[in-house]
Length: 482
Image (cartoon, rainbow, N blue to C red; front, side, top):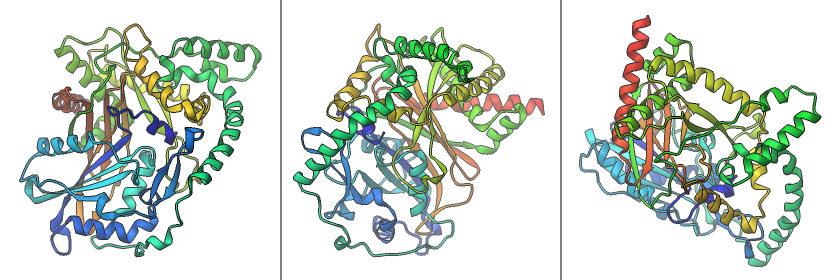
């Protein structure tokens, strides 16, 4: 799974994600939050953060996946940088800075992360942009990593240990990596044989793979055979029809640039909507996205006749995964009621659809994405991943989901970086060919921070306005039922 986020990169798609943290330096002991402060903090806690110390090592001839190895030449100064002063700029100015940082790939010769510290945000705030590669973290482990750098008290707490290069073993030689690769190439066929029966019946719900010709037919055929030969109850779920997405402006190839927009909305209002209609917070998020997309696309005369489809990443971490980094995710497909005009009807549809989607996903192995990846030899993995994404953008080919929506629960208590209070944390995630819209939501204290990422020519700010208007509509409906 980690290698998947490396394989899709082609100069236009990038596998990194960014957290845009807004801090109030007035709460820090000296009233400042500087790049030097951040370097000192990371240096004191780097021993707790293995992904920040590790770089990729390629296996000769590509016969195995890359390995993470601790970097003995690790340089904090290179990874933690001063960003241009925002000079009192607002959220749009901050978004432009974020777009420039998001458009640049991370250097694979170094650990795959950067921190950019920008002074001069509106009202004297400081912005810390944390850029991490998805190959190293998923949503849950990313939150764990950020939590390691932040405190729940005004003063720094926790262990402090000076970082020393002498603690890092030497880099493996090419011969050692080749030996590892040979072992991996022997093991890979065994992984494939083990993964084959789990993966093939569900290939039509694997992002990008399901755009390949014949994939859906093969998966359906295997499911029919399994139902005919089995007496268990899984067949009731497996018989449920798959979701079919219409082609939209988001199912296209993307260029290097990004369009970013973000805002904070009241979590209290979201919870009032939830309580009024007997649904979940995530249902409200999905219904808001549905209504916003409907009005936004209708204004452009691009509203599809069929409901749109979102993919929703969900954690499949086992309870004993602990603080392991890397990716433990699955993908849930959900139909969005963009075909319904009434806000309340959309919310009711989403509530029922999310329940159906969860039941569909329950019939799928938790390791499905890993199993599907094991069907491809490592030497062909990158080319296969990029080819499957490109196919979905071509007219006449099957379309994958239209967008990605993710709702991540954040801290309900105040967090601080070196004493500076975190006020907002806008998530800026990744987009890909054939999946050129990402809407991620992160709750924190009494608000929800929304981050929208689209292709470089997308008007994400007007879509954000549609999201805010949809929240207002649903909140008014909720208050009218009280």
